[in-house]
Image (cartoon, rainbow, N blue to C red; front, side, top):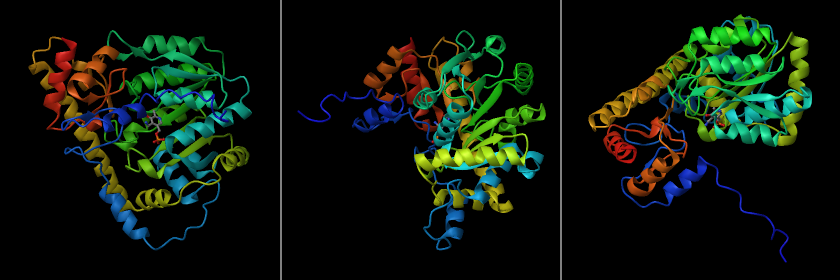
Length: 399
Ligand code: PMP
């Protein structure tokens, strides 16, 4: 009798499981459009030039000691300025509690644990649909979750009325998990006007906005513009919280670099909140990684390198936007009579295609094209040379 004889096999992660199947496929023209990792137009992973330059500058200039539990102060300050604005009074007056954490996922996890400990009875409301890991993170933290309407199947766009109605109907003081930009998986974001309205309704209900910003710069190509939702809320007087990730926009996926921050009444309150975030981090992983934090703070702290980074982020966003145009064009020219406008209307790394689970299965078995069963296509894996084959296959399975 083995000690672990009763441990059941865990279900595969809906996103990472796709990569496992992809890796096991020997077909020469297989396509992995599952995981959201940027590829160049040859389908190769990218290390940004500004990252390579930052690496050169820091090489040999740091030791291998631990960072403090709250990470690199310099990195965290730069990170906050990127999100809240270079001249944000809230960043300047120290009223934002913030710690470096393990990319976007780790930032959400710390926030969820903070919520469980210090916001008893406060439910987190999550968009339908959302990045599947949001559900896991808040489940494991032991927080109560609920959902709110976000996406409208019939228009493949925002269900603005439904969203506002659900926000209005939630108990006062609830927490709403909002995607700051490039909503995953739908690629559907509210307009600036709609964000203003959402902010107003949430303010009236004293709701707490927690923004997950995993794609700053990836939506529009402009890091400032992609932060507009947060800036609108802050301008309206909300005290928001925020998870930032540098996985996508700096291509630091495996470095696990991010920040979690909580706006507070003043510096004294921020110190108390930050001390609790440190206690949580201490028991979970003790301290965050140094190398990626040094890369990010070197880039963000140097005007020329930062300008180069802005251009490189824009380059990635523009390539994705170009692939959306090409995919739609190829689908329309393939003879498909279905509407494909949403492919170009949606924004960010993903296209929520509208394909069914069965159609996605057929793409995999008949065409060696891999994506999640909700029909989400990672546009970052689409290239000038595979877009034709993708469109033809999509037409074939949606006829
Ligand atoms: N939030 C959302 C909405 C995401 O799409 C992602 C990346 N897939 C993350 C958070 C976190 O990613 P990471 O932990 O790699 O920064």
